[in-house]
Length: 191
Image 1 (cartoon, rainbow, N blue to C red):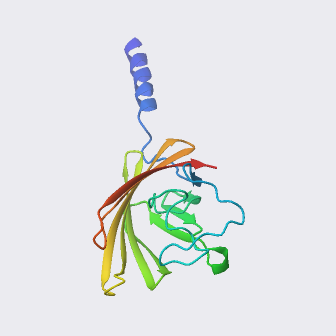
Image 2: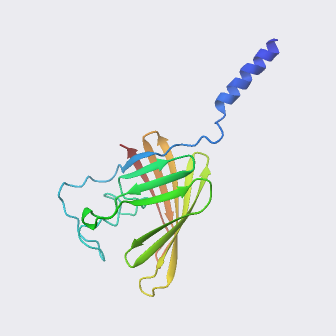
């Protein structure tokens, strides 16, 4: 009887330490880059080279790099089957809806297409889990501006939670148009 009681207690202890199958972190929330400088009310944005005044900057927040590639703040909605990232990309005067990226969490490829600049840009993404980290592998397809030939760029974003209110996105980009591969790590706070 003592051995049976010890076996039951040991079984309960082991079950408490083993994560529940299918239990994944929930990245849902509205996230802001903690290194981004707040914009001044009424402050006009300068046009980036090749851009136009009033358009969002080419970087995220006050960063000098591309950050995660998502404008800050952004909102993540997560269900058992999909992760959706949404953020404002266009200025109010453009009267365009926020950009919305939808990713299937079962490993299948999802396609998001956006019309920007000189035509449609296609993004094909597959999501996979590495423990508590979500890895989004995206292939961007677009036209070379000088030759109009199709080109691709690969981006890998790794999402992890340092705490329930702190999201880290590590992003690796392949080189494109003669550029070198890059990588960034950005920390976001839930608000």
